Image 1 (tube, rainbow, N blue to C red):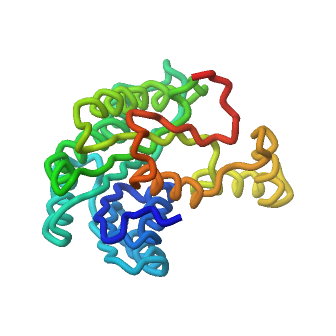
Image 2: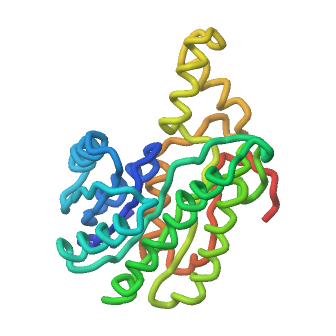
Length: 263
C-alpha cells in the first residue's frame, strides 16, 4: 500500500528498546525524511546505518536525552534547520524500573514522570507550530497496554502512562483538524529488554535455548506469538498516513489479543 507520505518529514524520539527505530525504518521505507534521536552515540550511529538501508529520503541523527528540556528543543530546531518543517512526530521512551509501591522512592517517581510523560509533552509543545503548518500533520505516541489494565509489578509505568493517554485524548480535540494524534499501546514485543531477559533465563538454566524462552513467552498470547517490531513500525506509519484520516484520539492496542479489557 502506498501510504502517500512521500517526501514528508518525521521526527522519532528515543531508540530505546528498538521501538523508535522500527518506527523510523517503517517511515523511511515510505520515502519520508526522518530525524532520529538517542542518548548513546554508538547506538545512534548504528541505527542511522540500518535505517539508511531502507530509505531513499534523508536520515538525520541527533544525539540527546529525551528527559532533558534543552535537548528536546535542540532536536526540534535541528529538524527545522535541516528539513524546513515537521509533518509527523513519533514519541517513544524506555521503561522505568519495576517494583512494588512501597519499595519506590520519590526519585523513582520523578524519573518516571520525566521519562514517560514529559518526554511526550515537550516534543509536542516544541513542534506544534510546525506540525500545524503546511496542511497539518500527525502525532503518534508509543505507550504500554498497561493503561488498559494495570500489570504488576510495573507500578510506575501503570501510573504515569495513563497521563500520556490523557494528554493524547485532550490534544486530539485541541489540535484537530490540523493535527491528528493517536497512540499505540504495546503488548509483548521482541524488544531489546525482552531479548535480554530471555538470554539471562537461558544462562540461569531456566530455558535450554533462546528459542525455548521465546516460545514460552509466546504461549500466553492468543495469536501464539509475541510482536515483531516492524509490525509495530508499520502500524505507526499507517497512523501517520492519510489512510487513517478518521482515526483520531485513539489508543490502538497491539497485544495479540492478550488484554481482556472490552474498551
